[in-house]
Image 1 (cartoon, rainbow, N blue to C red):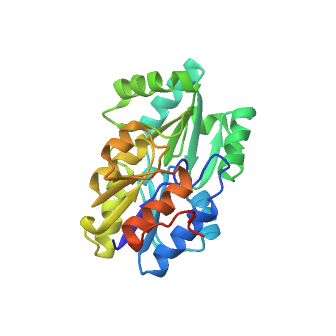
Image 2: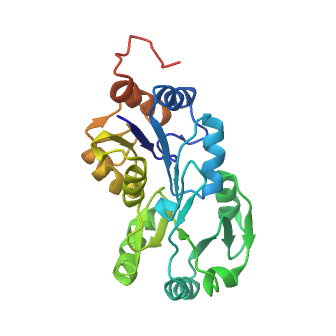
Amino acid sequence: MRLVATDLDGTLLGPGDEPSTCGVWAMRAAASHGVTVVLATGRMLVSAEAVQRVLGVAGPIIAYNGGRVRLTDGTVWEEAIPLPVAQEIGQFCQQHGYLLQAYVGDDLVVPWEDQRTRAYSLHAGVPCYVDPGQVFTPEVAPTKLLLLVAEEQCAEVVEDFRERYGTVVDVARSMPEYVEINCAGVSKGRALQRVAEHLGVPLSEVLAIGDAENDLPMLRLAGIAAAPANATSAARELAKVTASRPYGDGVAEIIRHCVLRTEEKDGDRFV
């Protein structure tokens, strides 16, 4: 493997939003063996960059599910949601009382501040700006939109938005309460393919690790698809390698098996 692409939330990052010691070790070990480490996330670029600094590795970042990609040399590729589409979705959400967030440039814009928006801001480690106009009747095309809905309603909302807007946007579930909306054709898979081509790495030499629906496009493309133990059934079905451990510990297990090619000993926790 010459390139490892890993999701963050639910994969490298556990419920506490911090990478485990094992996960940090795994990323640094891969990089030390000459492997390019790519973070592929639905998070904002600035949020992913903060995680990258904690990991102590350098490499491209696929942010906003592929809506914005930052290469190692600082070059940024971006594909925003067309403004008329964002306006239509915003007005629909306003009429139906949905909590919609917009990502403009690298700013998180919310229609109001409440417990849910504050919790998201804390989770992502970024400030939020209250501007209902930019969310519901935007004048600037957003890179991504995100719906915050109750977990028990999430699957139904995903299907509804796919039926309404599936020809102009891509809709995917990431976390249990997050519905991610990107420009049609934008995905982690497409972004990963572009990054690999830019670096001259064939997809057969790419390892992709993910746990959720928005990871499926990159899992389908990679030479080896892998998932931590906590992954959804859809991610596990695509994975050629499924770890026995969840989150960052599972990532370390996958890196050890697929990249370092070493066997685990009893009690070895990859530290």
